[in-house]
Length: 170
Image 1 (cartoon, rainbow, N blue to C red):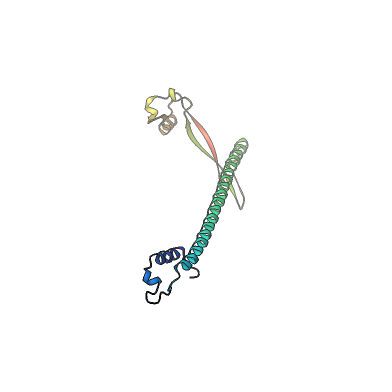
Image 2 (cartoon, rainbow, N blue to C red):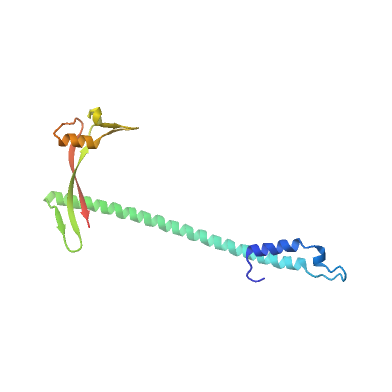
């Protein structure tokens, strides 16, 4: 009966309480064949110990889960902070490189390149003609269409082509 699982203890208790009287007492001699009460007492003690131990393990697992979640939240916050710091430093690099007209700097470990791209800045959506507006739930200018028109020499009221810079670090 050592190292029994909880379900095995429960099965033994149910077996004991469902025994026929003939299985417990010898009808000819009156001798008690199985001391049901003593066995039930032993099993009940084992069952309580097993339940307490399982409950302690559940408590330990839940504490560990909480600790892991807290650490994951901390790591997520640190990752977000590092991402923001990297974005800030990219802007800092771009500003410096634009200021002095530097396009590329590299050594054997890293390459920094100033990239240029053009995008539409719809500074006044209300002035942009309807044909250049995509309508969904919100009013939003068709930036590709506006960009193509401006590149083809058209003047689109309410929009202008602006140059943006980004930095690639490898």
